[in-house]
Image 1: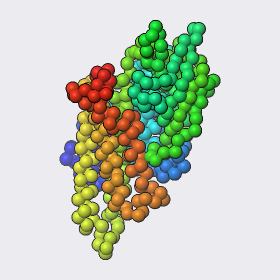
Image 2: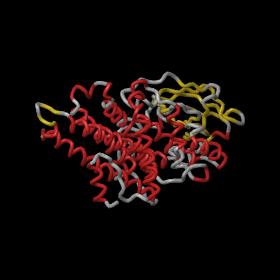
Image 3: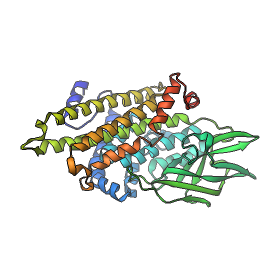
Image 4: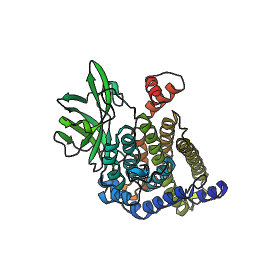
Length: 405
């Protein structure tokens, strides 16, 4: 389909981007759209209200190939590109942005960390089971001291004979029903600080998942603190060379930022479509609601902002897929699209009047989920600092920008 023809499809509310996509990408997008519409949407409000995502939903994503879409074929995945992964996340977020947030961690961030840092044994152990949905993984970095600033993190890995011991605690770990945790921690050797990642299994002695947080948004994605008390870590459970802090897995964070931006794009689209249907059928002051110029003007502006975000997102995924993704595009996508999503969902919710703030209608969750995205996977301010450091303006994360580049 041509770009012009696809634009006509957008006006119907279908939001099915076809330009620049190949046949495989269209196929996976359509499979995700069908799953979101027929299986996820009917329970999306329940997920939000109960703060629980049924385990079968994640298992179903494994059956459909979503969990393995970004995992190489050699390890049981589909070996698809970042564009395909983001198309899937975008479609699923139209129904449940909260579940899409959990799925982004599972589809992109965790497999990429293992792929970049892991040795062959670790990849064979973790990735095929992740692709099938048998092994749900979680990634944990944020701590009370220093938030995402690793220089102040207190979780420590210390040598104990031929192995290691892990002690400390983390905040805001996105977990779902994870079996395996990829935990960032610090080490000390000869006075030098190292930083890296270790594998912790849910059943390991001394590991504890603490009480889940009650959140404004992302309520279907379990989030909470985790703690480590003398957890035994073998050399086989260290990803990369943790004593030297390398190799660097920062590129995994960049593609993860883009994946989260895709969920914010889908979040905007989902509420736009529901709102369009609502205003088309509602009468206000004896007239169709669409006769009110503030309504049509605002809807037109939001549609345009959605298309601008789509262009930024999929330009960035194509840059990645063609080997040319540069910093700070991941941060630019995450900051701009997530901020725009909250702005637009707030305006869309306003059109629902009192109905919009009632949980029974199931629409205010889109705004709450959009708001959560502005702090998940690093705050907007941190991303702006990374961008500033990259373009030569310095700032607190200038060194991080150098490391990511």
